Length: 348
Image (cartoon, rainbow, N blue to C red; front, side, top):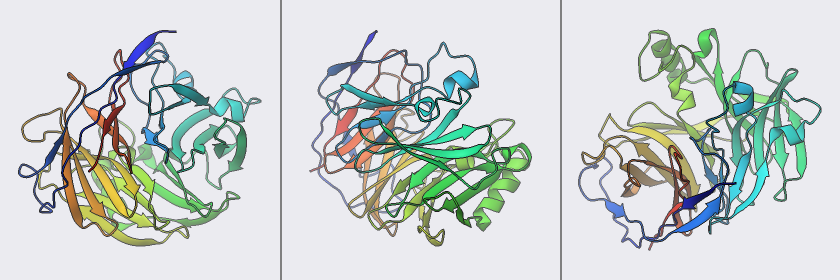
């Protein structure tokens, strides 16, 4: 097994109250400091979104560059990495369904206590596979969603046990799909807002912000989802600034919508994390003329701005926000070429 470098970074910074539309002005820049190492497999990129639990462990799926089929790629495990860079566990859909070697794993979710969930696509339907912290499979729930009609992307698990599944459907998978399911897999409510219909139309018209390939819709696939301290799901849609966030209750109601503006349409919202009544939304793109910097806007749960931060790349690798908690931010690189970085940035 090859050994790859992992960088743990600490930076003390002074929180700043910022204007909601300010990007190029008063921001806090996060700096790198220390280094440890961790043994991993063959890195080549990330599948889906990296996630942190309440203890600061990072969960990510690395793309094996030698994997040439979609089956092989989507059977790669979720890896648990401790804050000190130790590989502490793996979670794979094939362990939940050993009788079905064609099972594919899509979007994953990790709750505050370190329980791991993953969308499992099987011939007979779409499932949620759940794992205890020791890797034991303890949930195998079939969702009331048509396997051949929905292409899943993101998953969230409410504290009350319901599931939020997002994806695409329709011709060429251009139509956004979102629904809340009960703990037993029965559908509670589908979600389809005017912004979803607009995203469908723009993707079908070939708008590059929505239709970056022959199928799918970046409005959905480039987004992210987090569970807030209020028990609601915060579903981020990714196209350009301002970021659009649906606040969804466990009953499937869109209780409000947040629009978090950077005043820079070239920035793309890429990740959302939540901690202690706050949201952190990560944007990628050109920040202060640097294409490798990432902007993070911290707001309250109503979308009111609190502080802005930027983090620079490690070399030519830009960073992706994986977690936000009492110790600050955790980042990983977009592409793990020959290293995997865990980058820490402490808050005051």
